[in-house]
Image (cartoon, rainbow, N blue to C red; front, side, top):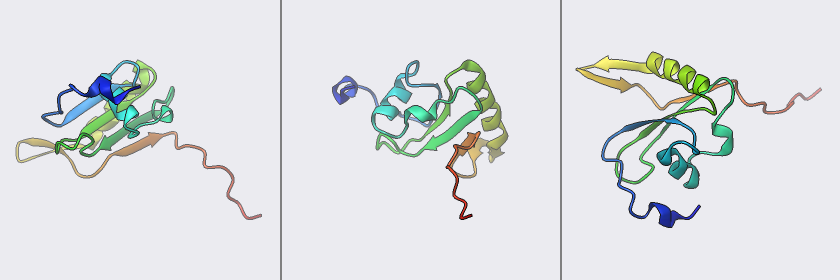
Length: 112
């Protein structure tokens, strides 16, 4: 993919929640191209919800609810709803999001 495809793309202009995967969401495709996301970020099972901070340099963040199927994205949305808090009339997240299930297999690190 060529960055020229995004030359005229508008900046975010606000914080955004992006759903799906790079094949069905242009913003996720751009984040994938910019290497904020990889092929492994779109699970077929479990869930993946991450925050990407200021990816386009305009001061706005993206909450990415990622998945290869609608069912996985729905699970991610349910998890996101559990993480959001209301404070002073606004909906906020207390910290960066990095919710991944199941956790990737890191291999056997035993010293036996």
